[in-house]
Image 1 (cartoon, rainbow, N blue to C red):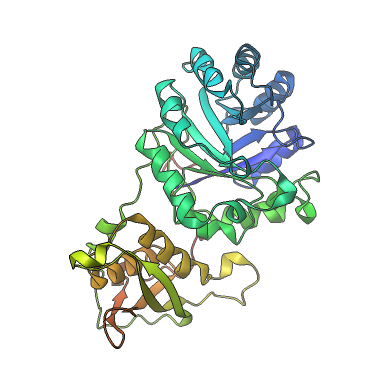
Image 2: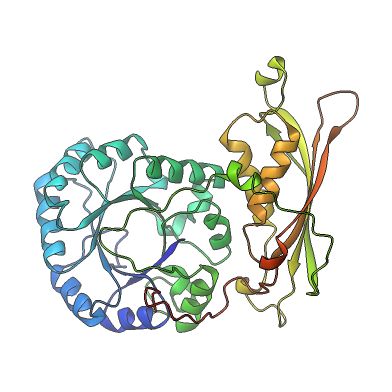
Length: 394
């Protein structure tokens, strides 16, 4: 599951964020790219939230002075922040700062934030783990220069998430994210997605939070079914190979629900594929044609909550082929189908994968996989569910 982090500037926005379903309330000074916030403001917002949600707060300075950062982090933690987000700017003393901050690792959960537009240095992840950081996040620094997905493609994001989780850390993604980005980023299964601009009136990050925008973003992220505690461990990364082995079945009994179809045609990518030794030397071009039947919404689509984007298809393919060499085209098709079927709105999927360089003509496989019938009754992606489980975040 993925948590929704909403950045706020005052107590009124914090209360609005909680009321509209944010999982983490993040205190930020939106006048700067990633500047430190005052401990007094953090204390005020923590008191206003009243323990309903964990609070995170930002510290950062381009000078990267270890003593200064530690002093600021201590003040923010003392003010009640569960998570202290530390901007890790490119600087010769960045590693010294990470080491210095370990002194308060037991008092709060430190989140190291790297910037995609400055070149996120993945070698820092191991250092953060050694110094008892709680997590690592990638964000954008220049908010006017594009979104996270303009800097990192989905395969690079997937690798970042895998690298962070391999060290036992929580992983977060942020950076001028928009509602259409959310289903795409959920494929990488991050622990946290962070938002500011997408939650504001007219998508102006310096404006006030919009309840309607909050509802749209909240509706695109599955609600977590456990509380967020300071000591919670990061969620395990999805193994797409195991998903493909689940045995999604061809159910001869058709479900009564009406479906619509989205599709991708003639999508050609270089793929590391083939069982022969000589096929391991260079990628081969593979053409993908994919049809996805999705349960029809109960009303005319109005926003991203009501649709399944074709990006789900193309990003699924990109993520699968970025992982490793795959010997069989059948295996490739199975993994793609399994990943697409993770979306509960998907009824069934047809994947055609055609190797274009294996002979005088194209050769490949076409498979049809359907969701298990007992789970195929879910018509909406994230309906407003009710539960008697007291652990559910309200």
